[in-house]
Image (tube, rainbow, N blue to C red; front, side, top):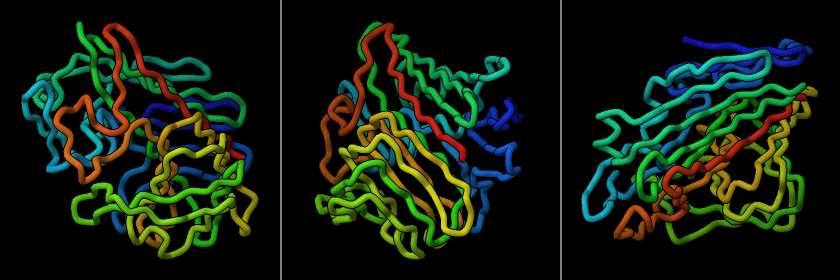
Length: 284
């Protein structure tokens, strides 16, 4: 089922399955800004990555000496969420543990995702609450895909010097090598082959915003990163979309860690407390 909210500027839809954003329409120009999914390239639209981002070595990890398996990007994107309600400007969904998730991830948790409209801006807030007596370890990632064309540009709000992590294309793991992308520059141009080696993955971005714009029309998306420690940028090569992915976590490197608590980018959430991250997209 899809739930909708709208204001004078925007109308958005969110699916209960996966709590996945499925539509962002500007009421000023009638345009759909969100990728609508196509099996030819990628059927997703805006999956939520929890409790891991990316892939684990051998799709497994150890916690307190016990081995668990976990699929790429976790399980939240492949589960039904509970619609919590809506008002004139927002709606929220929740996900809690089940017998099946406990086999993959031995924690009690509540994940709440709130979608809010304010003028021409969409804000998405993720809250992960630890319902256990001890510390809970989790990662979180957003993965929204926006319609674009080859030749469109992504523009950082500040000059950046950034190298992308290289990815093992067979196992989707981070390699020790990096490749330079920007040197005191702001603009990444989307080309046919820019994603041939998988996603661009950056750590330590200074900019507050990343703007998607085109020479072929006046539509823009100004994406507020809100200090995410990692940023992924990805699409299938040549596809007419681009994913802007703020991550509070990252896929495993080729270096195996002894315990899930040592995983790169993992967040330690104390008992009874919450980890909160939000991103905002201005639809111009």
